[in-house]
Image 1 (cartoon, rainbow, N blue to C red):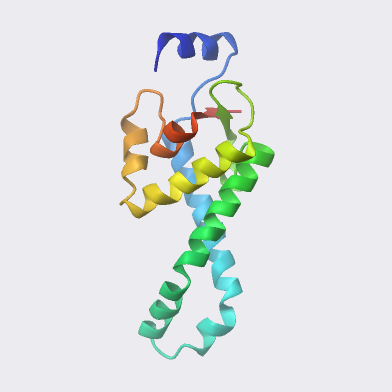
Image 2: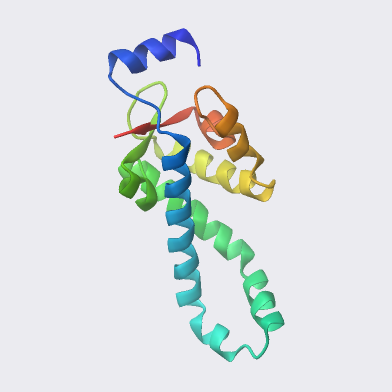
Length: 149
């Protein structure tokens, strides 16, 4: 993290969210979205006779699930600065330049690159664990930080 950003965060009394809080928020969001998908496909799941049919059913909705994740992430981050998981964990996303909730464009960028990072074996998330400013790839591309509330 550069000194100027560090000074701004210190002056505004803003602290970066710990990785543990971010990981817990991620887990909460993934569980909520998975439950939503199961509820939406409940009739199809109950009609599946074998585990293979269930897996094929799940695989047939991968694009819809990714779209649902992008919409969820973009909407909540733009509207509230946080997803439900982040709200529960008392952390939020801010734009580096303005220190406020990201705009629609920035939230959408962040959500898309978040899903891309997931598809690439979560390497972007690993990057965030090793990065001094705790920015995953989706934070880097959107110029955002995840901070404590």
